[in-house]
Image (cartoon, rainbow, N blue to C red; front, side, top):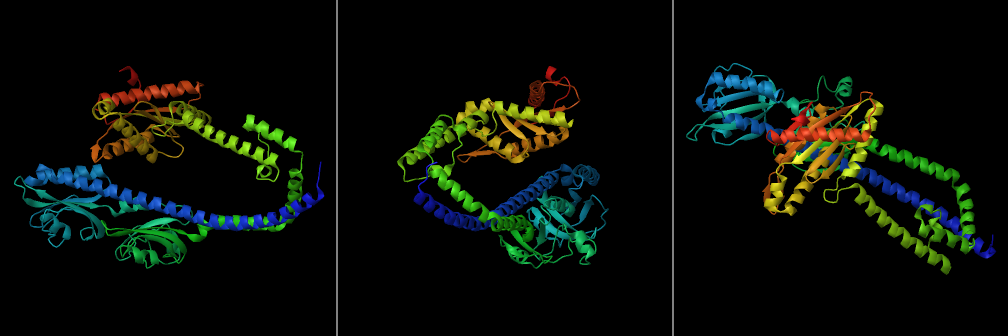
Length: 549
């Protein structure tokens, strides 16, 4: 090996100094960036949770408000047919399960004529705001009152009842279950300390805390946090004033948290999501301590040998280096050249080779990225193409075989898509497909696979999913598509889909994975065709011989 003693010593000294500075600067920069990265990730996570919960609450209230509106239009209410109203209320209570605490019909004098739970005798509610609004022809979307008949709070949704002359003759009232709101909020417990809860405009907690058992043991509460804890933390103090934001503060348990708070003016509630700071920073701190320990322990043994090796490499025969770079230019998979050797250098040969390497690597990178996109994804909708979907589907089938489990396939088709293309043009048709793809991607799990099989046909492969679970997802997709029109140039296009479901369950019988996928597609397609044939905008599960009908 050729060595210029002066060059070698200069390089060695500089590499040792720069190595120490580089590691120290890298450690500092890593600590700073990683801290803000972890904090930023948690911030985005809290924002996503909050937005999702607000959407769920809004959807639930809108659905219940629609239910009350539909009931207010019943002829038996206009006729004040008490027996018919009681029969309908009973049926609705059974149908809605735990969505409504009660249903009631109030006449124009404020007298409760029919109550789904109690027999009303001379009970008047003229002093209630929801009744006064209804008499004026105004619907009430959300109002929390204390129900004296049941001695507990409830959420009121009310709608005026009109006679055939368009005169208000009473109010149709539904008492929504507080427990149902709690069921929407409390599942959002994340990590060991993360939770979301609702407060009213007085700072009173409306939902159950995830730390209720702990607070009972400490004697803070006796049974429940609902309607028992007034919170005066910074986040709650600001949200009940109608402010939205995110910051660090001490929560109602005296723990330092990062919290996101959002005021919901339509309900007069505050939504708060919190996680203890020590939890989401614990991993960052442990890694930082480990890195510092390693740096202090072994850097003196690493920097000098590494500097000596790099200095020696720089003065290696240039021809050998040129051969390796030239080989790389023909076959990028054989790249075994250190990038540090190819950076800018005083020798012209190394500069030339560095430029060649950079051009070749950049071209290959772009080429491989484009090839991967073309090979795996549909360019219009950005979901898996048919080839990639079938490949991923076979992997899911193999998993079901190994675990002796099951999987389901959802096949959906846009109703009257040819009519859309013919009537509005292919540009609108393409936007319809993109719109549906976005809805699907937003509602499936991370391990589910969605693909566009061609034209207006989409398929979703669901691992570890039985037909009932697949039907829940399919109904949700069908409903979202129907209720979320596509808005193009201030014009709304209402779209529906027909959906078919097929299921595969491992029974120990050996079969080719591709044959199973083809069978699932055929069965789901048959079920989808049945949905179209029986009226469209429906979900059908494949039954035996459906494909023969």
